[in-house]
Image 1 (cartoon, rainbow, N blue to C red):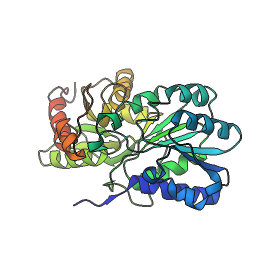
Image 2 (image 1 turned 180 degrees about the horizontal axis):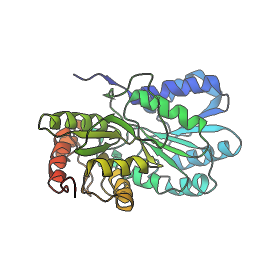
Image 3 (image 1 turned 180 degrees about the vertical axis):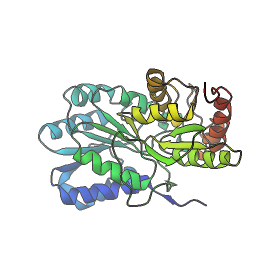
Image 4 (image 1 turned 90 degrees about the horizontal axis):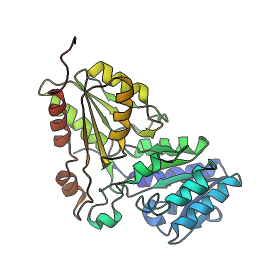
Length: 317
């Protein structure tokens, strides 16, 4: 079995390290610190931790005020509440003035599982990407999460970082390096490119390994930064492999597939297929059952690759 590690745990531990280095780091939560793992920071720096209770709109406003005062606030809750419940506050109080607020939300996507549709955040990336000036990041595993949080702390401007609830497969070594706005090549290939984000990255690697047994050389890109999107990597993948499949734990509309398709259309049009949730809210079940039911598995990615290869232009044309 693949080695797994908690992305939320990595976030909480990284906040403590940041707090030791910089007294301007402050953390806010909405009565969910035991789940978001901001409790570690609260234990170490109680005077720099603010529990805003069940008031996510107020939390975003307080974070904006702290940022305007020179602090570096990390505000956390479940992804279904921010940006969903707080879009107006993010737009008016953070995005428009361009404040240095870091929103890091856990429990993204349908991997929340049995909590059901009310807690499945499947629109959040589209909402966050629509906010001018925001950087939007979805790490693939714990090591990349730690690096991304460090980069967010040292990069001016607002961030939205989406984390998942369950432990995830380990993709990176502990000493990995995250670069904002740069896609990561995880597997080389010339026949097709699979561009994945978050929990779908391990599935993309598994799909590529299975396809190799069929003689298909699949390139795999980890697109952990959705905004700013690495358009150069997308254009290169389109030109060099001639077909692209995207994979994400998000609605088809407004997520990774939409962003990549725009870049492909504007740079080097090629056949595409998108593995995503198709215009529906998910039922209540285990994460594994939901991923299988809504077509978010390595098997589904491999099938999308086979489909898109049938539409790929022969080489030399």
